[in-house]
Amino acid sequence: MDNFMRLAIEEALQGLKEGGIPIGSVLVHKGKIIGRGHNRRVQQGSVVLHGEMDALENAGRQPAAIYRECVIYTTLSPCPMCTGAILLYGIPTVVIGENQTFMGAEVLLKENNVEVIVANNKECIEMMQQFIKHNPELWYEDIGE
Image (cartoon, rainbow, N blue to C red; front, side):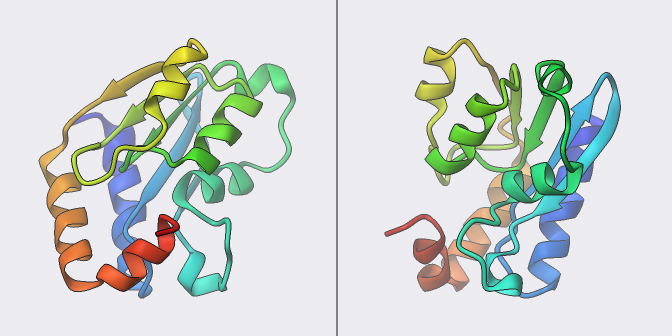
């Protein structure tokens, strides 16, 4: 497994440990992590702190040229909000741990020439299946249903 995906999974597990939703993300620029985070909607009482948004926030302000050379790793297919941020900042590549439990806005990413790589990582799939099974109300709140 890619080391950056491993770190995104670690972020997801940290979120679960904190009582939140187990989705993690890592933003990488030229092989170096510049931001990492996990879904902290529950922990922070936030409406926007999905894993990708938290990683972007933790990267701090960056010049547009930096984002255009980044890869963002996420344990779950990005929702429309996170996809919008990826497109806004021109991040050219998204590596997704899994999209079986939730299919985000991957078509929109592809239509905008973002390279989308889906790992179908067994650990990511099992983590989300278990979370959804045991926390369906929280899961559906997170995805706006």
